[in-house]
Image (cartoon, rainbow, N blue to C red; front, side):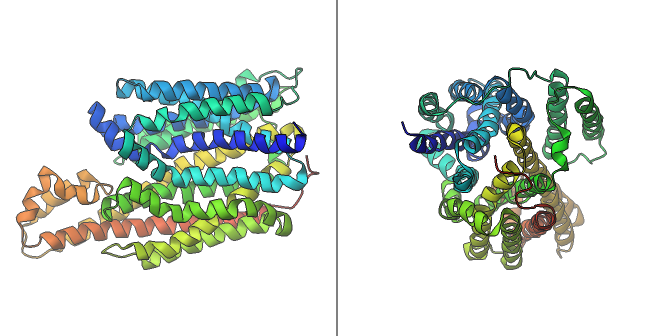
Length: 518
């Protein structure tokens, strides 16, 4: 087959793999209620269906990128696909929530292999003139997978049950393996290079403890940041970071060449990836909660509404790669993040109780444009700013920043939402006239225990039955919805700040063509 045609088949192959890897991060959200019902699990166990994948995925990104450089990217990529197929099969057949969590962690290894190596494979397969378009398509797939997860997951769960979200990966995974065997060419292996085992252990432990600390905060909203469960993990992360830096400075063949961070463009791209994950992608979780639990949309209907974001990615994503070649990665990234911040602020200004779709739609349009335009130049800026021998390392680092950003954002935005919700509840419940103070505290206990995410489900619980008999029932319900509105406004402001920081950092740090093209 001609080389011209081969590279496009390579892009199709890795895009299919990336689609599956990223969908497995978001698609599970809508299946959690069915999984909980099937296994009779409590919510803390259920969260590990998400966190087991995320934790292993983030921790393995750097080591697997390095392994691909040493023994060959094609081998490691195809091995990752094989592990993904096996992990999907075992997850779909899991007999308990414990086994499902274990198999999800197994899937995380494969997700890391597919994500970190797909970017380097695409970069190596395309000449510089076409690389922007190729990375634009690759990034569009990432954006579609993240924002389209609820739609695809909702359709599968409603039609075939929760196990289908895993089993559907099997035929597509096998197809990707066959395509990869035929079309992907093996990279040049550096047989003289050895695995930095100490760096491997330290980097894996560093990312693991950092993400686990965030997960602990997410799962236990009553924990302060100074709680020993969190403080111990964060302290250990700092020690591991120092040890990792020292190790990488003294070993002959480090896992990460620290000199890569002297490149301002590379640093700017990573900051942009982090704030994009923390702000926009972390915020998707709470937009889904708003639409499902407060606006009454089903999982599938929520996914359909979020197509307004992902739809722009399909249209503009490939074009963004071309546009970046005209105006430069720097200004496209900065401008796209700024558009996202404006979209969030517009939504924050418009949203009110009772919630209506028309309040979200203008913001969704701007977020869709932002998401479509920002991913391709971030990838392009990172990959074009490093030497050819550093491209695998750069891909791994970029994905770590994006994934840890998502984990960080979900936690921080969840904290802001809960704080705003609780403060508003306390203020307005206690201000209700003609209700005994003791009963007000009883109501607050029910609402605090149910949490900001419960929404309308609060009033369907047995504890809340007594509220329905009260003359002030509708007023109380309005207070709860208004409390969530106060929390979501705090979340929106936080997201806007994240995106504006990323916009400013991109404009200041990113330079065009810091190094010659690969």
